[in-house]
Amino acid sequence: VASGKRQRFTYDEYRKFLAAIRASYRFTTFREGKSIADHAGGPLVILRHDVDMGLEPAIRMALIEQELGIRSTYFFMVSCPLYSVFSRRGAEEVRLILGAGHGLGLHFDCAVYGEISADCLDDRVSRECQLLETYFGRAVEAVSFHRPGELELSGPELKMWPNSYEMVFREKFKYFSDSRGEWAYGHPLDSEAFRAGRHLHLCIHPVWWTTEPRTPAECLTELAERIASRLDEYLSDNSRVWNTGRMPRPGDRAAADSEMRATSEGNAWPSR
Ligand SMILES: [Zn+2]
Image (cartoon, rainbow, N blue to C red):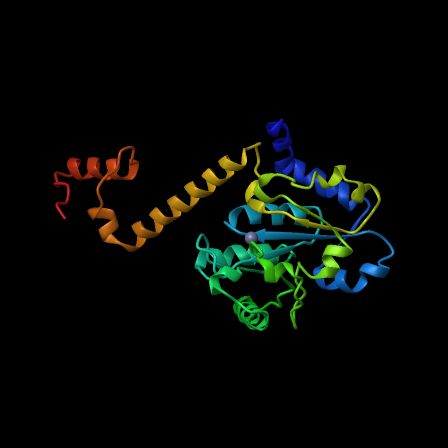
């Protein structure tokens, strides 16, 4: 059953999962993996995290990996509508992840640029990498593509950075991803590739992993609630219009509290 599968997306399961891989694999980076895949002398694993929706779940994951002495690479977007690595909070969160010993990657969204040609791609990616490198004072290790289109899937090579769709990572590494909160190609530990000690490329999205078992829809509901409360916090801190002028909504605790305060202080509810 689906709920049984979801038991495998808790942090406890994540610890066990990593420990099982660590027992016979060596964790590597995209750059190193690319150059030593043919003569590694043992199975390699690249652990990649695409941060599509929020930074908080990524922190949890980064700290668990640090605890286990495992190094992975976090791929951040510079164009994500749901978080900003350049905001005060976002930058602190990214620094926390990098401070836990993990690599900095760019998660590049081609769609931001509309139609993009192969020669443009390198230029656009370089600009975004430079943004991250300048801001965080760290080299970008690799690039992964968000919702890849035909161009990205064709296995383009970038001048400066390895990217996750290069042929080498698809041919020499067995790929597993937890897209949509399921192991679409089966659980890595149940796979023939794992038993045979083939190189692995694991793409794990922190948003699907939680303390208690959750459905993927519940994971997104929690994310939406976090974003909504942050929006409210920002507007409350920065706008009197938000604090005084907005219409109370049903079940709106903040508004009800301030209405009660206003009433008890003998003030009328603001008319504007
Ligand atoms: Zn993505």
